[in-house]
Image 1: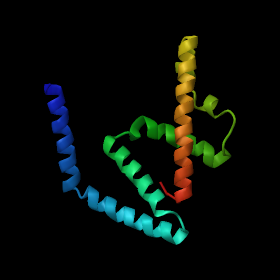
Image 2: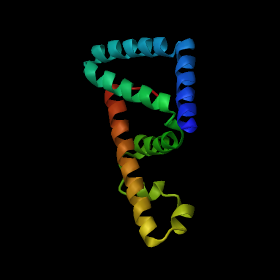
Image 3: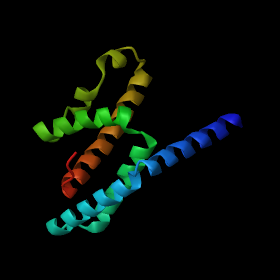
Image 4: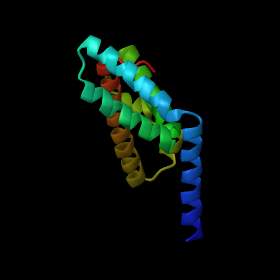
Length: 133
C-alpha cells in the first residue's frame, strides 16, 4: 500500500513540476504551430492532434529510453535504404540471441518484429505529418 502511495506522490510531484516549468504552455504553442503548418500543407488537423497526444503521453511516461533508441535505428534504415527484407536480422542483438533457447529465440524474433512494425508505423505517421525530430 505504501508503495502505491509513494508512486502516486511521485506522479503528483512530476505533474506539479511540469506545471511550474510551463510544459503545457509549450505543448499548446508547439501544437498550434504544427496545426498551422499542417493546414498550409493540406494535412488533416485531427491526425496532427492524435500524433501530438500520443507523443506527449510518451514524453510524460518516459517511454523514450529503450524504445526511442530502437526507433532511431529503424528510422536510419528506412531513411537510408527504405524497407529492406532483412531488417529484423539487422536489428537483432546477436550476443543476446545466441544465448537463448530455440523457443526464446522465437519469442525474441516475434517481439522484435512487433517493435519493428510499430516503429515503421510511427515513421510513416511522422513522415506523413512532416514531423521534424
